[in-house]
Image 1 (cartoon, rainbow, N blue to C red):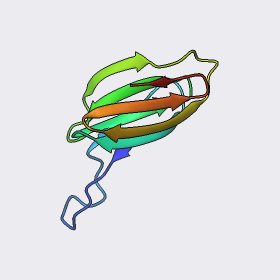
Image 2 (cartoon, rainbow, N blue to C red; image 1 turned 180 degrees about the vertical axis):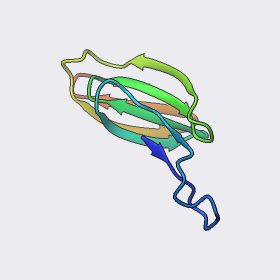
Image 3 (cartoon, rainbow, N blue to C red; image 1 turned 135 degrees about the vertical axis):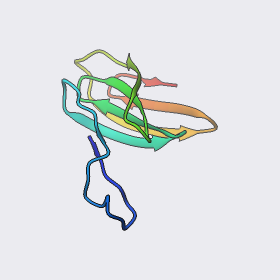
Image 4 (spheres, one colour; image 1 turned 30 degrees about the vertical axis):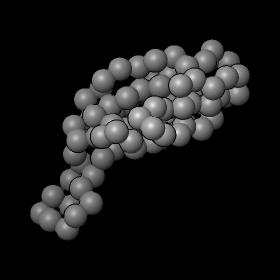
Length: 87
């Protein structure tokens, strides 16, 4: 995942930060000043939106599962996979 400035400035087009995972990223959600990345192995990564610093990684389902959807609501994050829903 790459982050770039969105405003017109001298920084336009300059990469702000980069975060890489071992597996391909299946879903991305921006909420709570964080970027949530669900990879194809069902690992959920949380990074600070402003800096790309990793806050943590959690396995939300077995790697044999398929990454599904993510929804943020009422300060919680809900992650659906082919085998479960985690809040």
